[in-house]
Image 1 (tube, rainbow, N blue to C red):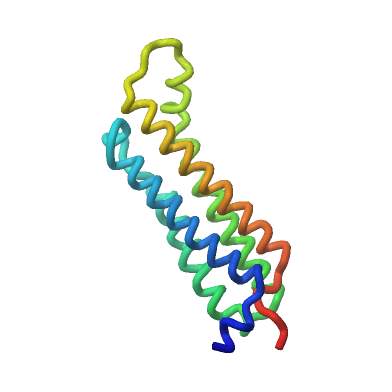
Image 2: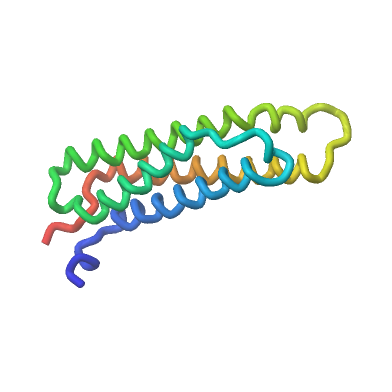
Length: 145
């Protein structure tokens, strides 16, 4: 119980970032393996960067009270960069599909739906990255007891 009491808002933001990273990764996998974009394939960089960020966030949440504050800040910065890389890669692999909708030709509902899901996933990655930026600036994830 004392572990829960020692958490401050930035520790809980780190947990929220891990959950949003998981949601973003699931949206990317679902977008890549179903519907209109099913044949394109899955980019391994996005999955690996997201998984490392999620596992790093969990480990940092559990053990940050035992680490130096500078090391915690560096770790949250690296986690934020991993999420930024995953988000940029998501944009790169979906930019053609998004750009295709700008052509003035009729588009199917499947195309529009796939692009909407991709944009939703990209927004989740951006929000997650912003959470990690705030957590990095804060530095301390636990209250001093």
